[in-house]
Length: 93
Image 1 (cartoon, helix red, strand yellow):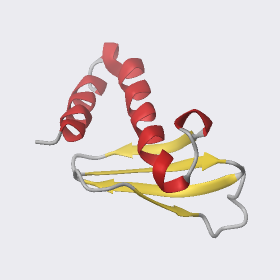
Image 2 (tube, one colour; image 1 turned 60 degrees about the vertical axis):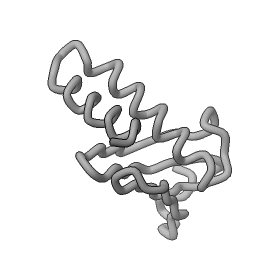
Image 3 (cartoon, helix red, strand yellow; image 1 turned 120 degrees about the horizontal axis):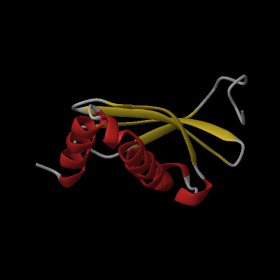
Image 4 (tube, one colour; image 1 turned 120 degrees about the vertical axis):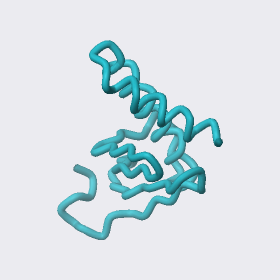
């Protein structure tokens, strides 16, 4: 099993416990920033992640950087894909 998938599963298990909530959310957010970096062309430190949804086999989130909004997803251990929002109301907010 891919290490990223194992990490997501482990975080999901930790989220179920009160003590794991804060640390696991930080790890997932950091992973989403890192995975978004290449597809959107911003460094992880410049990216803000919103609406992070980690499922068992799929992950999705919104990445914001440089005044632009991107919808990102990853299925299983496949590549991360991000597409710039075409909705003028979400750009740069």
